[in-house]
Length: 140
Image 1 (tube, rainbow, N blue to C red):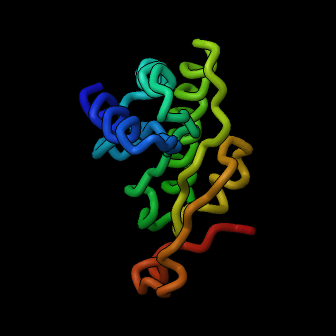
Image 2 (image 1 turned 60 degrees about the vertical axis):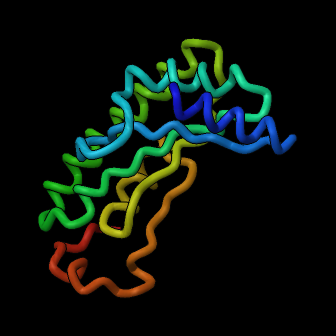
């Protein structure tokens, strides 16, 4: 909440508006809030004129280099469930959730197929990260 307050004050001083995403813990346990807390943060964002709630960031970095298809599918099923629960927590407060964004080079086909993500963010493939070659390929 302190971060939102500081961001809002800085943006207010500039006279501008910015889009803010709430990051959820999609399964890696490294960053983001639990899905159930996403609504409370979104409510804090929309309480400030200079901030516009743009959606949820739901990236599961730990799933990107899981070797087997079954492991990645299970991890992304969990990420999709967390994103779905977080979106419900936001919309239950009457706040529109225009976008769920996330995914990665090792799993983007799974997130895209889920119907939950409106934007995917693969990127390492551009650099042909050698570690991805060790992953079993996902079926297209």
